[in-house]
Image (cartoon, rainbow, N blue to C red):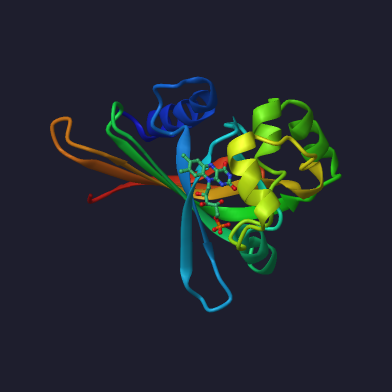
Length: 190
Ligand SMILES: Cc1cc2nc3c(=O)[nH]c(=O)nc-3n(C[C@H](O)[C@H](O)[C@H](O)COP(=O)(O)O)c2cc1C
């Protein structure tokens, strides 16, 4: 495989993941840095990928810690592993936050199912729930969570690609400019 193929196969896999229930990249780890310099990781749903611009879209509650952390420090890492492809992708980049009411947040919200919308309607993530919020865990109440719905748009600056043994492990580093153009690529020892 050539380095250009490493690049295209990785981004095609990412772009197809949101619509592919079998893809290991449907759920990825989004890692930010908190005010104390401590790395913070959590699983999120990969919502949309633009492979030409190297953009990854994630949805979240703007009252969450990740939103606060990314507001203070836009540097982020996305980590994914697909067991069937035997590939780990580690993307380094920065995020732009699109808050409630922004064009991108409104557009993304308009496409969500009512169940997904309802997940934004509870109390602030991480806070202790009040009795109404505890009741809504079981009743599935669907109040309007749009006021808390934000979009995280991650722009990849580099990709660390790692493939498990076929027949040996392989690893490559790929760099991108602001427009998503591949500017450098090299094999490295796994
Ligand atoms: C399979 C799975 C998918 C998840 N998807 C999302 C998601 O798309 N967006 C999100 O904000 N949290 C998602 N979560 C919850 C986060 O992992 C995390 O627990 C929560 O957002 C609070 O994180 P924070 O306090 O670091 O902001 C998901 C959790 C799991 C287990």
